[in-house]
Length: 157
Length: 418
Ligand SMILES: Cc1ncc(COP(=O)(O)O)c(C=O)c1O
Image (tube, rainbow over all chains, first blue to last red; front, side, top):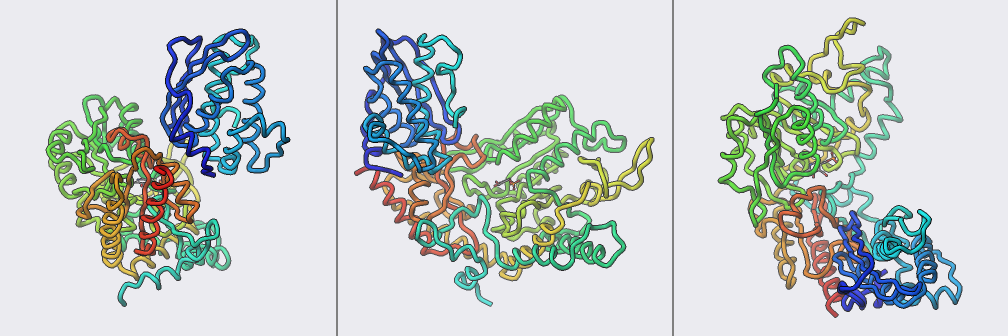
């Protein structure tokens, strides 16, 4: 479960730090491990123009947030949400994900978390940053319908 | 017969299984202990050969099962050195035992003749900062129901009660003092007699949470001097679903019931009911028959080994483990760092590595430890940490297993610092 990529991101987190310019900030907590993450996003022209975060917790939650940041910054919001869905499905796969090569390319380093899906107690850790990102984007005004990104970490697991 | 851990281990079938292809190293006994074959067999034997309901049937099975259930009460009474078997109440676990007391105490407010237990505004209920949630929440709820004030004795940096606070926090306003004998989060063994004496001096009821003491220390309720002592069966190598509340008979006799139902009554009339004498007053409904009987077997099991022998074995393990763990650079023991007045439960943290990561990586080596706040969140808050990793030992734990733990923790550390 502890792939080198995960440990690397934990030791050298990417996009850690809260940017001064942002449209929305959210704070999510995972009560099982006491993991916490704060995410700030800035949207522009239908993309996630910037995202920064700060957090504390287990390696899975912190590394996953780091990986997420690297993947979604600069992406079209729709694409970022689609990727979020893919990651969610990966986490719900109980270790039996069937991924196409295109999925694997898209998920990139996030594939390293596939092993986590076998440990129900840890899935919330891996999802924490992704859920926070989704909430932050919604709070920044993306989408209008209620089901766009209002899920809290855990609700979908 | 001299204590021999290898002989003991043969009694526990689960200890021969593997986890992730390596032999299981079970260091989570404070969470729940494994079961010897005799306990597993006792439950099955009751169902296979003697089962019926207790206390109601005149037929042969009914009398056999009642005999077995009441026999378990005798065994527990002897185990605790209780003056009377009628002071032993079977509950679902210690959580229920503590709630039974908290609810019976608030029921006392509306019961004639139970004035001694009346609690209201201006009164104080005292616990300690190192309690398990099951010895915090029922008292917070009792305080809410009665308007009494909830207070606690603080803990110091080493994980011990602040001695100088005891006499201040327990005072003339105190009605109830409920505290843990051995902490499940810190391993600390508290000065029971000291606290009980103070409670008695101010006229408060004293209650001892012996959940973590019963499996590790010889327990003698007369020697402790408390009014109530409770423990839970599954940590004493017994089955799940059964716990014990011991109380002084004169207090139990005045205490109103918690749950109403069958077997707890003297007579029932549509205009009102009267209640049975203790212990049955507090055992409403069909009890956990097979579990209580198997708990009796567990008590026989540890008694045959000897609680003093178990204590000595675990004392040696604790000293060995404290040495081993503290040889790991940066590892911080949360709780007493020396083997004095502490039990075989050791919590620790490692800088920059979350306890859930430690526990998960140890699991890959077949080592079962617990990570989290151990249902004693105020302890973590006190030390400014989100959680700890906790290794806890039992009658079957070996020094080899502690070596495996120390090696495992070293490996985790190396993985994270590489
Ligand atoms: C000190 C202490 N008190 C109470 C409990 C609660 O035990 P149970 O869950 O069996 O009621 C525990 C166990 O978790 C404990 O360690």
